[in-house]
Length: 83
Length: 83
Length: 166
Length: 166
Image (cartoon, rainbow over all chains, first blue to last red; front, side, top):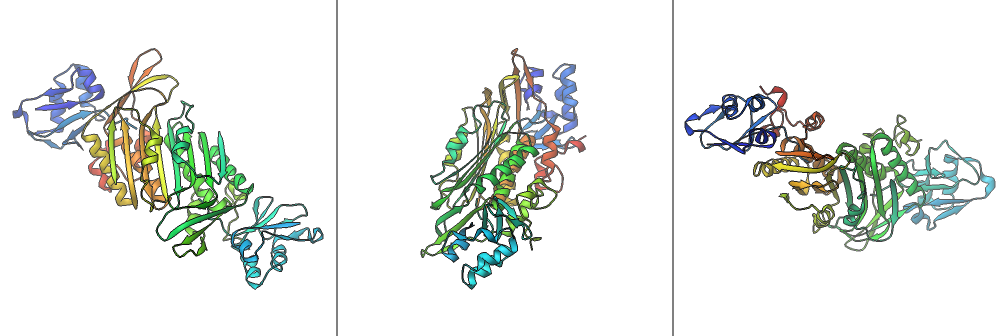
């Protein structure tokens, strides 16, 4: 299953997404942060653990105690800076 | 000296201004209201006495206890309804 | 930087927005207000004004806005004479580096204009009868939010507090 | 009535204002916001977004605005990709019978967009170096004025309260 990354998360890892096996799910958001972090170096792991980095499940921002199920659309990104 | 009238004051009197002799000045705004009122009928006199009708001296709104001097630009008008 | 214009001609809000503060690349936020004549029961509008005092009051409101917020430009264009439904009565533009100042200044000047700029409006109904528009108490309340119409503010010199008027 | 569009093309704010709610003669007030890329130390901007979620969040903010105030139309157009200083990043239009609703809705949707629509901006300085723009705490404070980011509001489902985030 693909976990989407945006902005400096994408840039730090050098990829737009991290692929995880379906059997990793269901998983809590805080556990998923650690798992995704393992795809990169220390800098990336640190970013993924930063509470300012947001998680969206099915395009809604979710807290760290939310659960991600197989088949959900999941993304991690920094605070928004549009407009 | 000319006292300017706008909107339904002008319409009620049927004129854009009331001419008063220079020796009527200086005069307080409340006395001037009565004096200008005499130029018209009961309906106009009543309007001139209405506290919602504003007075401007030299293009600034003035209270009833302000003084109008000869040579001032004076106008009476209803509450504004622009925009 | 602060401009006011009273006109008998149709107002083209889009053209005004297009030209407004367009050569200043320090502008990050432009807020515009377009006030239009509504249709429905009204078939025409006529706007009368007090030349001279009108410009003076609107300039005073823009000066006050420029003291309150960091503005880069502000413009007011107001129509007078006969108008049809759908036509623009007033256009206000406010430009600033950031949006808070532009939103505040635009709304402030409109609130001020409504209660303190000497314009008077009458409407023609579908039967051809003309009627003067009554001032709305809500406009006075909105203006009070900014401290206008109270002695606490510099603008008090431009606006009489009608509740305290004799 | 409520429209959102994300575009790689240059935004023409004047053309958007011209077309916006133009055939509805019940509209008495149109407020527009134009957010522009400022110059100075910045030579270019690049905007990235999360397609799908972006439109969803902006639609949610317009739905919320339409529940709060009596609107007749609302439109948001947001640029993505590479921009030069002076170009428009975002345009928001709000139309209503009276001005209070239009001002509130336009400012509300902009405040919401700033903290909840997934766009990210980076700037290129005069030496060609790119840097991600940091989120401003002031934007979060402004959004809180509307009750956003708190459980008291329907919008809480769209925005995580970062202070309470683990």
